[in-house]
Image (cartoon, rainbow, N blue to C red):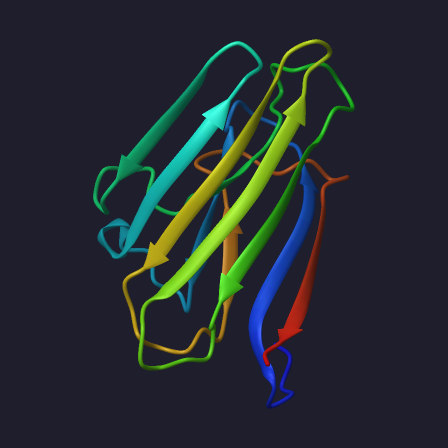
Length: 150
């Protein structure tokens, strides 16, 4: 991770597609796979309807923050996301993650605004992105950036 003393946030920018029907990528920190340690809030729309969803840890979707296109969608269409991991080194608070996601599916699509909280005060030293089953498409792309604080 960036080691500059003024780096306070991280940002992941990605385009992604699943080789299976897994619609979301989960984020996990420091090897913590306990679903009870992640929460999720989501606002979504698809051009004709909108909705909201929330879940405390333990329900299964906690930490599922990155929307992706799947094998059931048209070939060569990828979803895009920008994920902010706030105060990743701060050992005095839980870590907040927010993401803006979207995918176009030739006339239909989705846009999502997600927020996840990792219920740990540990500084983040590793990030793992995974899906519930199968592989991420080989042409998916992920970039990690460090963001300076004030």
